[in-house]
Length: 332
Length: 286
Image 1 (tube, rainbow over the protein chains, first blue to last red):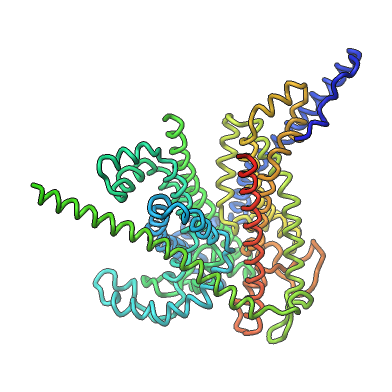
Image 2 (image 1 turned 90 degrees about the vertical axis):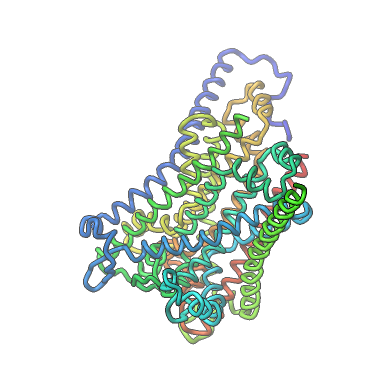
């Protein structure tokens, strides 16, 4: 680093009043800088609070008109001006649930592979490749889903599911319906692909924090790699692993474009996962430009507010869980 | 006795083998989607590339055209977002790392910033809609840029915070002991040392906003024509891709693939550059 801006040595001693003046101006500049950075820091808080408040304000008409019915009814009628958010809420939860059912075990497998199984030379390139998945814009997932994956689903996967799982007694109704391709199952799978890199990279990172001495003690007692992972690594990192899962869940709940492409935008509540549905984010993205009345617009913003609250809670849990591991780390 | 132990051992070995095979299969599963998605984008995108993309406007249905106005809009809004979001982000990150490292307010801001980092971008779009678009009365490129700046902000805050924490405290102490005021220490010593890291953060933020679609739908909307007017609706590549991909026209689909391909290539290049900066820095520090 260059040091040319540091005070040159060998200056004659400055008169005292100029030193005092200099100190005074330094203090002023310091105070100003402090105010500047503090207000920038507080701006982050203001941004989040402002987002919540503005959506509550924008959605007030919907909340006051429909009250609790907004959360519990399924009507979504732009002509009759009646709006109930149950269908999009249901769709959001179901697609996120499908995504987590697929993504959590797969991410655990990837993290296990990258920390315990793969030869060291393979770890970095594979980890970077998986992280590339996280960098691909969500609209690309959506286009790929609509043009490539949906035809595959409707041609092979869905007929297979309908034939083999459809007749089952309890789960059957989940897998009955025409092979449209678009629908909640497809959206859930696309979401799973999108959140795998997030969950697996958190898991990989926390698995790496497990002290080698713990793992080696278990190996010395004769444990297999799987036993070490399941009985030592996973319990040690449990809270952070849950944190990573919630981080992925937060992403899955709020993801918009990928879901909008493959979900079908249908305001209907169906038991079948193969039928088109809707999610909160997809409803907002699809219908915002069509919202011609105050109450319609307000209902969409109210949906946004709901999404915001839910993701806020989920992400806050994620963060707290991840912090717990760090804190424990400090005690050791 | 030993027969039982042998059996138990074999069962444990078997279980281990199954689990590790499944772990490898999970990795292949993840890579499979990556390859499939990138391959689709590459094949369809390259087939749709043509010079007209860069100098013709987005066409009405059934006609030929390009994406020039969308590229222009994306570049303008992204740059403006970086220009607005980066300084605030660096200052806020400085606050966290230098002024509030162990304080309660610092912890709260860090917590909120991390939530903002993963919050759904569509929510930020609605926020700017009620804050900027509605009072102005119409959609505008400026509103789009503000939304993107809100996405840039937490990324830059986070990297600045982390990078400043990595600067050895001897540097601060050395500079302070020479009588340098703290703001000068921060600007001339700490920023200089953390610069590559902060730059990486800005690049990652740029990569993130260049593919953002959802928040622009309510803020910048879209524009069929060339427009440099920030107070009016502005086209952007992701929104055009969305609109064209959802349409029933083949010529629009082809343009959508071209746009998707360009965005993907851009995003991946930026991420690679960001990684290279980090890697070089690591080598330099060792």
